[in-house]
Amino acid sequence: MSQPPYFIKEQNIMKHKLKRIILLLIVIILIFGLVVGMGQNAERRHERNRFAHTTPTLFFHGFGSSSHAEEQMVNSLKSKGITNTVIKANVNSGGQVSLSGKLPHKIKNPVVEVNFENSRETNYRIDGKWTKNVVKALQKRYGMKTMNMVGHSMGNMDIMYYLLANANDSSLPKLKKQVDIAGHFNGILGYSKHPDSPVNQAGKPAAMDQYYRELLPLRKNYPNKQVKVLNIYGNVGNGSDGRVSNNSSKSLKYLLNGLELSYEEREIKGVSHSKLHDNRQVDDLLAKFIYE
Image (cartoon, rainbow, N blue to C red; front, side, top):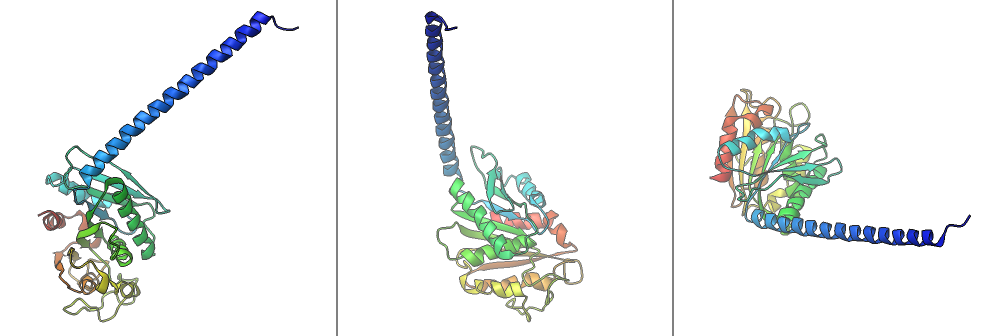
């Protein structure tokens, strides 16, 4: 049985109204998205302008650890009134970086807590590549032009292999200050062939670990003219921090080559490897070296 003409006409009117309503809703959603997007872009530009005039300090944790190991040092800086800005940089197992953290209106000495989800990657060249991803993400998002870097244990190798691959890349932010804590530049006790090889006055080891030899090009390429380095190591009484010999830590000096470079060493007596990132003396040395 066919429907009456008036019913068909009403159906067509209703369909036409429904289409108009749907079209209107789509336009409203598009306009709302555009307005929100413009607001977000404006906020990003404002954040970028505020951040670009600062020198953030990036913290890198050790093997099998996470950004939680950095919190003691960062909280110390916050309690001293040195910083009011903390950014989180999470690096997934594929090396992709996601940034989080809200910037205050007046940014003061921002710090970046770097977290590697795969914290057991022992290919230092990959670690250096992931470190570059963090640097470039901060550069793209916030316009970072200069930076400081702080490493604990394997975090130092993240920094060194980043520099090995990128020291001469002028398009990347300039490194101003570097703090190395418990660095195993010439090997680890129980894992390397020459983990306690003696060093001479220039910091050159008598015998060199494989990874140390890979870092030797830094003697020519290290950004000597602009960077200052503080090397901190612990001594539990046997010439090591229990995991890394003091000789291995002190071998950093030879890689720097001493060309127009400010280099300092500080021994922390009685403090073991894993406790160096949770130590008030280290906190004070770091704060004074970077910010005073």
